[in-house]
Amino acid sequence: MTNPPRRINHLGIAVASLDEGLAIWRDALGLEVVRTCEMPERGLQVAFLQCGETMVELLAPLGEQGEIGTFLQKRGPGIHHVCLETADLAAAGAQAEAAGVKLLGAGPTIGAEGYPVRFAHPKSTAGALVELLEKGED
View 1 (cartoon, rainbow, N blue to C red):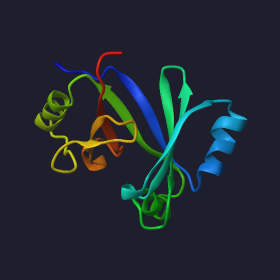
View 2 (view 1 turned 90 degrees about the vertical axis):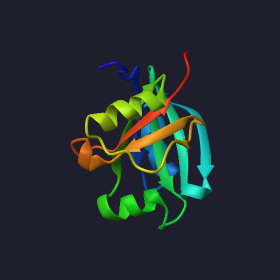
View 3 (view 1 turned 90 degrees about the horizontal axis):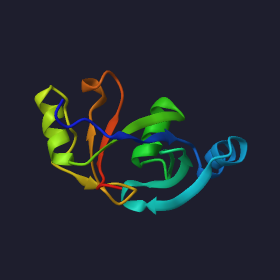
View 4 (view 1 turned 120 degrees about the vertical axis):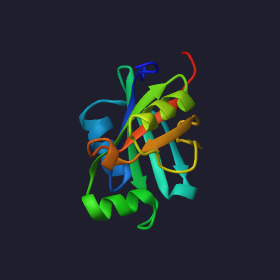
């Protein structure tokens, strides 16, 4: 593999509300909230919590019709996606596609962390929604 991911950047967890999610991940499990934001264009609220070198990303719907609202209606709360960090999103995406992974959308978008991302369809990744995130060197 010529362009392996550097690490798991974060695990996305769908929750009914940020308050409920924070009661578990922050209050009960002791993770520190690093940042929260709203993404009204995607119908969601996000909270990032630090866990070593990896983050837990809580995803809560702003309404029933956004992507997380729809996910919760179909599947309930739980793991939504795994995010793999790469130094070169274009190369990682091309490598994945060459191996038969179906990437969603026409190209990169900007994710909740402010970096370019692409998602891979779960049907082509053994059932897991995979996010590829391009982040420069630390």
